[in-house]
Length: 245
Image (cartoon, rainbow, N blue to C red; front, side, top):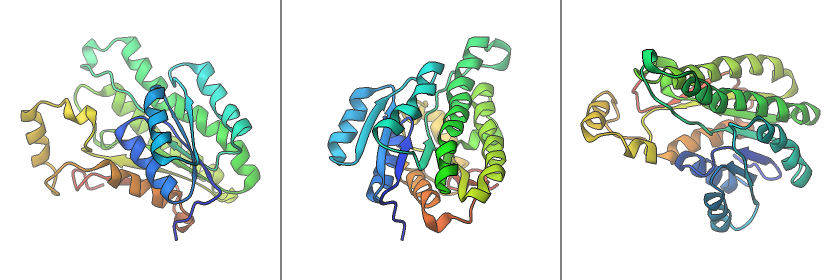
């Protein structure tokens, strides 16, 4: 069960806590993992840790030319991508009234536009192979919103619609497209939250704790597997009951 031997998986944002956990799970399942991010040193450390079947590709998803070149470069060096995990994401928080056009567009570009472009790029070979898994990492914020994050919420909510529409288009070719929507997950981003705000957030989580990156990665691993072949267009919430949707 849950064997991905022979599959090539591309994980963006692989240098982060959740991205690294996803890479480790897919690698343990037997996949050849292509790790992408802006912090090459972190990608190289991940490669050294896992020792084999790991290929780092630095890419800044805010730069269109780099996004457009990423998949063709990977497929030339490693082969066709069978699993795409759009995990990379950024925040540039601010109140609606004060948010600049730049802050809005930067978040949309990285979180939503780049995901669309990578999906479009990998889908061509997935259709030829008649097999594929696309998993977009969204957020509970995309479902319920959050003050000060209109750009982030819009980008993550946009992944829901993008995934469902693509799922309907690609299902006949044995390609599934799903979302995983994490809630309050332990990460450097969460570590920056003031203690008072953190405690208040924990009161709203029935599980009573912060989630771990490995718990998000486990959901991704399942959706990438053959055992999940009849699940598509779905949003899997990993949030400890924070939002029961």
